[in-house]
Length: 485
Image (tube, rainbow, N blue to C red; front, side, top):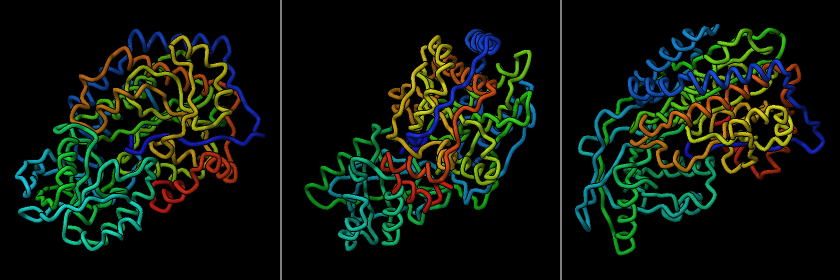
């Protein structure tokens, strides 16, 4: 999941609510799916293979390509059809060639706990050094007030610099403005303790940033701010990164063909890529493993669902939802034929139900599915819109496609998110199986209903939805920067 997070908005008050029908036969099939996953599920083993034997999956890296081949093989083993990669182009791939290093020079010689920021260039030999300039805010006027100090020096910012309610688009504008002032380097402060830094991107949209960037641990950042309160501070850091330009990256697609190919399909998605400090077991190995096992359990039924279920593993989520944006652009004319898209990207704590993207009608649509989800302790819905454009549902949402994101507890997830501790030993098998069952039960119920899940919103209704949640400006800035299609 991207650092700024998840959801969307609401239908108009006049929109008629629809309800997925669940026949006695469908209910029996949902019980078979649940029993298969909870008693014989493979999600835990899938996640182990992905995290332990393939490892971190930076978009376009050799590990990512291995993961894409592995996922296709697992879909084929489960008996799915139309298994194939769909290629899109990332501006550049990025991997650290060697560990970053850095230290404070004055007023104290202090070795830093430091990571290279993703998609930032290597420093020159010997690194970069300069006086540290703390960035108070990403507001353009605030940056301009410090423009005399920035050129040739090292800019430092932390969570406080982002403001109480960070606007991803405004932050991107601020970073672009900052780059034009030609600092020698940029250092970000982490909310994670020294040695457990939270990796993130220096560049945007898979493009290499013009300025070398790195991240330091929480305690190092706090020390730096205390020193800055008392006078000038100088710093040096060095990074060596491996970069390849214009690389073809696969999304992985597979299907369970429905009994009625004329009906709109149900799409299940998760992102295959991860950050590099850990092995991406939680973010988003859990989502990938859950989709694979949901596919296995549904395919094992005596007959397929009424509607086709399509499974898509996206690349480039961590760099700005690149793979899902590419998918939507490639399939723009077909979006009307997607009955619903369901995304899993919140880790493997017990599922509580589904985020509704602010779509009140989706709660009514799930009414007949709720008893089965209640039996899994996951019949809840959330209308939380704090995290709007931050995982792979977003490109579908802004085109009016009904969407759901798996709702799990995230307190454990956010202690591991993008960190070296995001490894397989953090996974609890029973919790992962439960979340997988929620995904499979919901997807099959929607796919086996002759009634549509929910209405597609028009462009006008999407705009009304965004206005309701004061998200129009953020939507515009994301579109301007290419993080939404």
